Structures are given as C-alpha cells and as structure tokens.
Image (cartoon, rainbow, N blue to C red; front, side, top):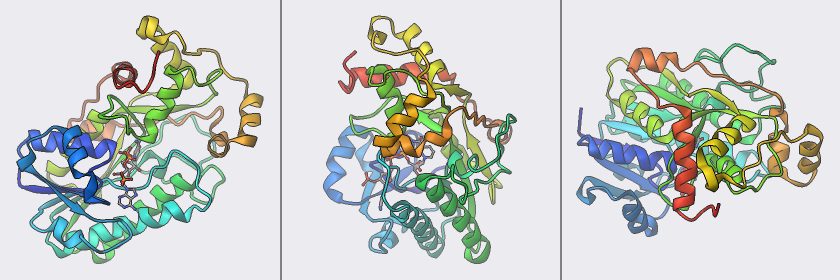
Length: 338
Ligand code: NAP
C-alpha cells in the first residue's frame, strides 16, 4: 500500500528508520519536528528522496501545525514522545506530553479522516509493576503505574497508551488503532544524536562502567522496529491490536561478553564482570538515573513477541547482529573511541 503517511517526531531514532523504510516502499511521508530549524540537518542524516518527505512544525503540547501535518494522510505512525537520558524531577514532565500528544495526534487524525493509526508504545506499558515472574510477558499484560518499579518514563508510556485506547473506543469513529510495544531498541545509529536506548551499549563499549550491573533488557533492532510499524500500517484488520517488538532478554553481562568476543581489539575496554549490587546501590545515592533503575536489579523481563511473528510475519534479526552493529556504528560515528 502507498499514499501519504504522517510519522511524528522526525528527529527521533525510530522515526528516522521508519521514514526511510516507508519512502523506500513508495510512500510520501509527512513528518513533524518541534522546530523547522532542524529540517535541513534531518534531511542530510536521512538521505532519502527529498521530494517524498515534507516537514511540519508541531509540538506534542500545542495544537498548532497538527491539522496541516495530517492533511491528506490516510495513515499515521505516532512515534514522538519524550525519552530523556536523565531522570526528571516531576513525572508530569513526561506524562503530559506523552498522553496529551497521543490524544492530540489521534484527534487531528480522526478529523482528517485517517484510516489507520499506529502508536509507538513500549514494553514499559506491559512489563512493570508485576510480582516477580519467570514466564514471558504478553500483549495481555499491563504495567501497574502505582508500583514503585514504575518510574516516570514507564508511567508516561502506560498512561499514554491507555488514554489513547480509551479515547479511540469513545471518540475514535472509524479510525483503526493499534500499538507497537518495543523493548530496548538498539542497532546502527544515524548520527551522533542517538536515542537514550543506545546509551547502555555506548557505556559498555566505552568502558564507562566499572562492571555490569545485574540487570538486563529485551533487545530489539531499530530496523526491525521500523519494519514492524510498516507491517502494522499496511496489514488488514488491525483495530485494537497490540504487538510486542522484542528479541531475547539479555543481561548486561551477557551483552558485554558477546560484544567483547565479537569486537576484537575494539572491545578492549569492555568490562565483563558483574558489578556487586551494593556498589550499584551506592552509586544510586549520587546518580538519579541509577536510582531510577535500582528496582531492575536481579529482575528478568522476558517478552513473548510471537503475536507479531504469527499475525504480521515479522522476523527480527538475531540480537547478536544488532548489538555488534550498534557498537560498530558508535565507533564509526566517533561517539566511542575504543
Ligand atoms: P528519540 O530519538 O528520543 O525520539 C523521541 C522523539 O520524540 C524526538 O523526535 C523528539 O523530538 C520527540 N519529542 C519529545 N518530546 C516532544 C514534544 N514535546 N513535542 C514534539 N516532539 C517531541 O527516541 P526513540 O528511541 O526514537 O523513541 C521514539 C518512540 O519510541 C518514543 O515514543 C519512545 O517512547 C518509544 N520507544 C523507544 C524505545 C527505545 O528503546 N528507543 C523502546 C520502546 C519505545 P526532539 O528531537 O525535538 O526532542
């Protein structure tokens, strides 16, 4: 299928790969950025056919620009949402733009006659605030935002997806809504301005950690996340669907060992020993970001992505390939000096 699709947040990591794939498949893409001052730089990074990409200024917290951005679009991928590298003082700094932005994008999409709306949600809306469990999480699970595990970003993604689904049920009209819920997104970076999710890999390869804290992530490649969005935009009968986008759950030690094995001399700074929990607790006293993830220590959050495989024929690449490509592109871009 082709036509015009709105991808929100054109400056972002996932949006960049999604825009590239959509244009390669023949779509015209409208994209939003907070300021058009970034248009030239983003065009340079994406290196796509310029005539197939149009930019619009729109902020998640303001109505201005949304009607123009979505005019003529049959499909929307709402990707933009705050994903900061640092902890925030007030959770509302993330919850407001995540929730209001999703509702704003939906409202303007419905009013413009959009048929399909794909929300980039997150595993954060699924796998937090549950009593410890060993079985993988599925699309039937929802994060409990009132649990101490649920830090501000986790709350923002859960509240936004819930609000979007409630709004669609009450006021969405004919719009077909579904979500893609990725775990930690890694893979090649497009520029030195990369997503928070790549930061964990940067720290490992740069030798910025004295050891590996005892936690881990479901890992998924940005190219596969983009591909799953495209499938969710194209496939029939998507109303209400939810798709986990994840590969295997890997601990930091497993990621570090894999990278050290594969990178040769470039992996010389990678620490592969487990950092004792008490040292992580001490650094949490000084570092709000570490404090935020202290609840992750010792936890496993495996995710079952079989729904996307079965319903959409989604086949993600091996995690090893994604992690090595992440590290190599960080080195190639000069972000990490091995
Ligand atoms: P990213 O590179 O930081 O992209 C976030 C995008 O949201 C940027 O384009 C940013 O614009 C935009 N944005 C933030 N606040 C905004 C506001 N108030 N108004 C307009 N735009 C705003 O992160 P990403 O990894 O690509 O994440 C994209 C989406 O995937 C997010 O919804 C995130 O929650 C979700 N996700 C990411 C991961 C992951 O591991 N990366 C995993 C699961 C889900 P600026 O450039 O102007 O800041």
